[in-house]
Amino acid sequence: MTYAIETEGLTKVFKKAWSKKEFRAVDGVSLRVERGATYGLLGPNGAGKTTFVKMLLSCSHPTAGLAKVFGMDTRTRPARQPIGYLPENHRFPTYMTGRGMLDFYAALSGMDSGSRKKRIPELLDIVGLNQWGNTRLGKYSKGMLQRVGLAQALMHEPLLLVLDEPSDGVDPVGRRQIRDILHALEQKGVTIFLNSHLLVEVELFCRDVAIIQNGKVALEGRVQELTAGSGYTVEAEGVPEQLATELRTRAKSFSQNNGSLAVLFGDRETANQAVDLLRAERCDIEKLGRVNSTLEEVFMRTVSGK
Figure 1 (spheres, helix red, strand yellow):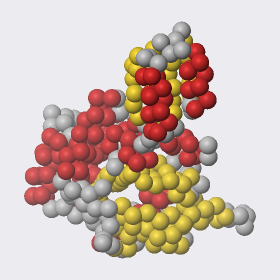
Figure 2 (cartoon, one colour):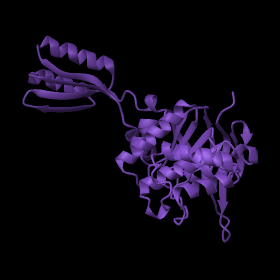
Figure 3 (cartoon, rainbow, N blue to C red):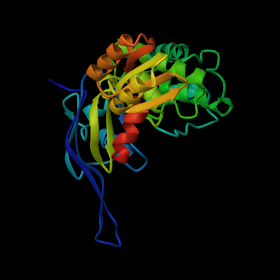
Figure 4 (cartoon, rainbow, N blue to C red):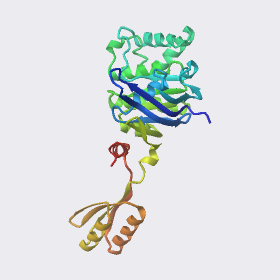
């Protein structure tokens, strides 16, 4: 199977000129991103995310290991052609109009003038800037700059879209618009590789994630599986004190107030046993359900080691 992104033991070591010490920014990372996947790369500042992305884009060459895009070594020119990239904190010339900037960057990527003239209006419409195409970028808001930057990354209809903090500084409406655009690309089979600190956005959009810490993969998997099943909650009214005391000994967490209680159990069997005991005492069960973790909680447990 040919993956959209495949790395094997990818490593980047930086050496200080004035010392023999080495710093492993990326340390033996092996990842496989399936074609058409929405994949999030997470990690605290300094974890190695940006260095990893730079090696994918051949902006930096690995010290060891190998990175491939659609089966091609990322250090070769053909491997870069199917990639669209939106960097963090991009700086487009503010004297250019949105339309002029797109035309300039499309020409740099090798698109002919006929293709550019056809593609630019389509993209301005997709990102909701068709009325702003002839306005200078210096008058664009942060959200508009992110959207025109996304249009720039999509000019040549890439098969792989690499996004570094695409929602940074964008208001909730703008984040929703960007997410809708990415969902439409996902439906077309575009692989989207997302690097972001906005974990709520990643959880809403990405199917798979990898968490990098100290240059290594600390956790990887499907978002749905990583956040599933942290426990089962039971809330009830009119609970006798003796039964409440018994349930407390079985619970992961417990709160009680005037005969009402809320209990979190670690597994379904224990929760079911508690429900049977509550029904036997004719207690009113107000709530019964599975409790999932958020991606933020999973992230914090991973990076803190707790």
